Length: 226
Image 1 (cartoon, one colour):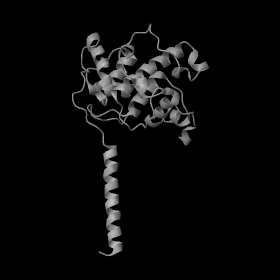
Image 2: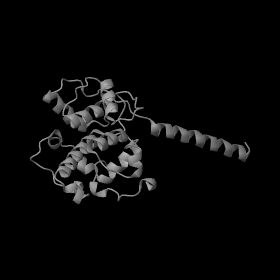
Image 3: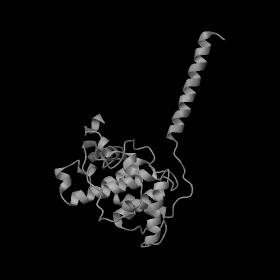
C-alpha cells in the first residue's frame, strides 16, 4: 500500500477512535436499585435511611437527587412521584424548563448546583445572573464558594459529594443568618462543625471533607474568563 494511502487509513482510524472516546465520555450512567423516595411525608425512619444510604452510592440518580433537594428546602417531599417532583421544581424555577431526563439517570453536578444556588439565594457574576443561574455558571459559583468540589457541570455526582454539598450548604445558611458570611466571604471554608446542630449530615460519616478540600477553591474571576 502506498505511503499516502496508509497515512489516510491511520487518520481515518484516529478520527473514528476519537469519536468513540468522545461518545463514551459523554455517556451517562443508568443507576439500578434506586433508593426509596415515595415513602409517606413525615416518616422519619425512611427519611434517615435515605440520607444515610446516599454516601454509599457511586452516583446519585435524578430521582434521589431531586427528592433530597425538596427534603432539604421544604422539610418534606409531598410530591409522591418523580414526575410531580420535576414539575414542582420547574415551577419554582430550580430546574431548567427543558429538563426531561429519566429518574434513573445519574444526576449531573449542574442540576444540583442550579437548585442549590436558588435555594441559598446566592449572588454571583454577570453571566450567572443574566442566565438565571444556568447550571454551568451555578456550578462555577458553588465551586468558588467551596460548596462543591472541582469539576464541570456535566459530570455526575456521587453520594459522598451530594451529601457533602448539603452539609456545606447548611453551614453557609447558618453563617449567613448570623451575619458572618458578608463580612468573611471565606468563612464557609473554615467554620467548625456545630455539634449542637443535629441533622442527617452530622450523623453520617460521608468523608466529603477528605474528598474535596474547600481551601483549594479558586480565586473569583470574571464569568467571561471562566
